Image (cartoon, rainbow, N blue to C red; front, side):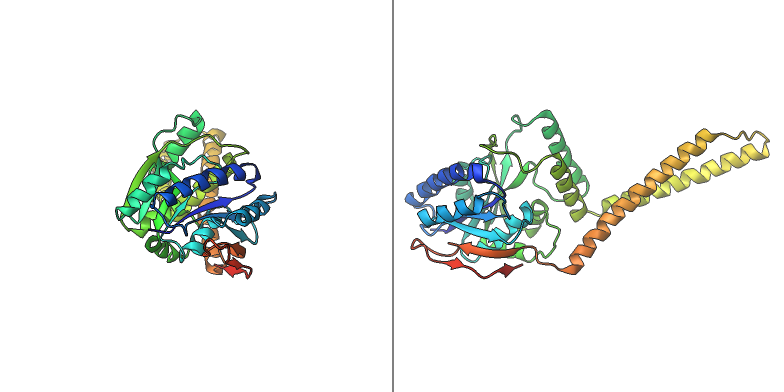
Length: 330
């Protein structure tokens, strides 16, 4: 039987953690009792520098049942880094790991299908939303546009897949080989290349609390994905620059012909439009190039992606041992 670990990043999830733990415990115990996974399996909550009582609740859950484990990051690093921290800390202890959110929007009944597909020999199993009827028109439209834009930019994304996925130990070892600081796991995981499958599911409404991805963070996340996996925006600016240069040559010939024909009429409209258009294009180009330079700057610093301050229950079995107090960096 395979040891299955669930990795759940948590940031200020005090309101939902109790119900999440209850439902996940029921699901894991059912899988254990049916003999589909080992009794050494774990539910691992990754506390991403929460300001509320999230870590205290995780400690209480571990004290009540060794099925629960916890990883406490030294500071808030964001969802992608917290998720990577959990995956990297448990990869040596698990045969397979499923990552999911703490808000119960990911259908936990799909875990059965994840396990079944893994048993069939797939190293990576993607959770893909079947439909987006519960989303608002704006969120549905922007999400679909994002996936189409990423594909246009050359990124190998799985359509309608977020971070609900299963990865085998071999796939996690492959993931560990990717050293970039600017993380976009949805784009990195398909690059690993091991056999993969898809499980469709329906996404639920958030159980409680507020979404950790408002519009500002969603736009930032989209920008991170585009600039992390494609240089096409720079190429587009280069192409646009050539087009404008070609147009300028045509206009130069046109204005010279007017000059020699004696029909030159000074006008501020053409000048104003040209100045605003070229100025806007220059600022856009500088911004895009600056984004790439900034990412290169951060990558060259080679700062740790996360610092683990404390771990409880990771790699330990039902006796409840296995607390780690020393900080770990990656």
